[in-house]
Amino acid sequence: MDLDAFADVHSHEWARLKELSTRRRISGAEADELVRLYQAVATHLSTIRSSAPDPVLISQLSQTLNRARTTIAGAHEPAWRDVQRYLLVSLPAALFRLRWWINAVTLGCVVLAVIAGVWVATTPQGLAAVGPPSFREEYVTNAFASYYDPGAGFAAVVWTNNAWIAAQCVAFGISGIWPVFVLVQNAVSVGAIGGMMAHYGELGMFLKLIAPHGLLELTSIFVAGAAGLKIFWTLVDPGPRPRSRALAEDGRALFTVAGGLVLTLAVSGLIEGFVTGSDLPWWLKIVIGALALAAFWVYVIVLGRRAVAEGETGDLDADLAGATRPVAA
Image (cartoon, rainbow, N blue to C red; front, side, top):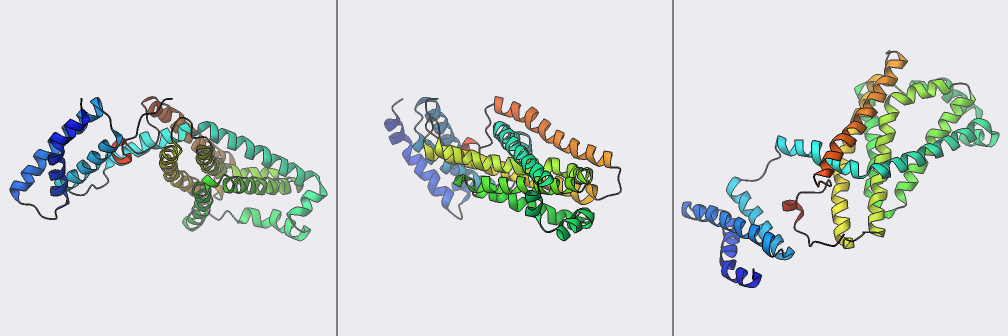
């Protein structure tokens, strides 16, 4: 197909559709014309996509059709099917594509936390670095356990604090430095507290109070760090895609992940607020935390694998993201 000739023949229809779509008021006859032109231009767009995929022209016609659709049907309001698609397709696909980054970040943070914990628990220098004896004894005997005060207010505070940590990893991930700083600081802090509790013979209490909510909470932080580092690596090595396009696609998927972290951190906050400090048996608390983490990974692996196999990436769909020029893999 001769794209220039095709555009010359139909450009007046495209211009007329664009004009009608931008009017605040149209008559009945113009509304009928708008619908007719919308159907015709949609056919033109399909023809161009299949026969002569010019990304610039496809993007222009897509925007014109989107504007016309809004004029015809009214402004789009989020529907349950959009929420369903986000939760069952986009989010698990984005998380599944991050799985190896998540595993690497988790392994690195766990190793670092163990090293910090052993250093604090077994060396005078490490123990002194945590604080003076009076502070350590007060923290071990009272402050650590009393921190977990059951209730909605405590859950909200915990959720806000963790969401802020995750947001930093996501927002400044492209720097490649800030996510590492946040992850290292968090791992060393958790490991040092565990080492201090172990030194005073309270390692069991530490694990009992951390495990119920910490399994999902820490995993959420690791996911945020992995997402931030992934966008940094996209900047360094975009692969066969142009760098700007790679950053745009992976950046949109990154915000898909960020929305999911709001949900996982809310769940871990509820567990911390209503389960960790409750009167439930310790074994049941830990089972609840383990089930929450298992549910997360089943969600990622089962739904994510299926979504990625169908070509989903966690990015916006083609109509919203805009057409892109094909590149060699």
